[in-house]
Length: 576
Ligand code: GLY
Image (tube, rainbow, N blue to C red; front, side, top):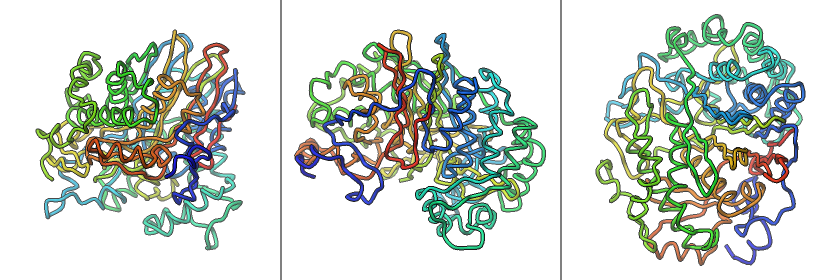
């Protein structure tokens, strides 16, 4: 890639066979600062869902009400990851500065075992976690949204769920990207589930095109029931009956007792400070908050802002801090209700200083050598799907929400008669005790499968404040790349002084300890930078897009919030 070209134009996906554009690495000089508002914003991957959330704000709802409405709407408009059959995390900061989190991660069913995905040949049977009825954890989304509403909501539950029910029953107009996504899924593995074909295939046959109308009557009925009878209707009653019957008829293990026992949990956020900013992140069972703060602690005194955002020195150090944080993630992190997590140590700047001392400023470390105590065998890839949205209201209440079905369209299996997709989140557990390998499988104890346990997540909904005021709300999909996308966006704003638009547009970097290889969105690296990094011992390559970070920045001088949709996703929108 030639520097001169990169200096003139953003890197568009024709080159990468992608549909998105990534800004040149020198940073955009775009005048587009995002959608400005003093009365509130919703920024998500889907314009209809953002509009639903913004309408709730205009009706007097607060940011939590709008987030709930957006989440339910995305279950209709963004079936790849929006959901009621999955789980996620919400970070909330009130106008008075109280910060909390809602953990609505799925849990392992009571009949799960640590080796339930190990085949007769002793290897992981990935087909069982990839799709079908043994793949789901017990869904948490509806309980999580209920808990958020009980704690902070001001509008009636019914009023904020009903818009999603109407979208499903009345139908939505397909965009080109949703039409292509549905066609691809139906041609692929989703096509082998008759209930999914019934829900998503074009009536009368043929392929979907932009402008077609997708009507989801079963999902509409389920959402109307949840709206009118309350969240309990998802966990008991006809929706639960449909779920359990369908799962058990097809060899799955989730029971009525599993559904009835599911609880969302309010947890204290993890917090860090970085150059005068406060970072508020998601605690375990997400690894995201700890890892992002750990990397910021490592970077803080390095002076990378003086080396330049894209210099080999900066990129080398940004790879090394990722390597160290992801090693600790593999070593220590899991469900805090089951494993003792050394959270205080991992967040401690003193611990970061010890780790930092191990970084060679001109040589790449060896991931295997650093983790030799836990690496057992010379990728279990986490899915890129998941979706993030950010919300702020006129009073300054902020919500950062990331939720998921795990893979795109989750398990690919729609619950017959209820019209929603089941997750395949069980794949986020460590599936073969003891197996930690060079391609990304982790077999350490904290994240082994156990009944009632939450699987470790990388989802990293994050709120950044300064002097007591919100300055950034961000998060992303992307499996383990989520942590790095969020880290990059936070660094771009706080250390490199980018505007919100520049920070979100800027190309991103990923390294996750193992596999020991860094990937960049192509615009980040020119050939001389690649050569310099390789000379230091890094394995580096350019790849396609990373993440989808729908964010909000607030100008501290004016108090104006700017909604910045991530232009990597075609249907995204900041709505006010
Ligand atoms: N399934 C993606 C995550 O939880 O990190």
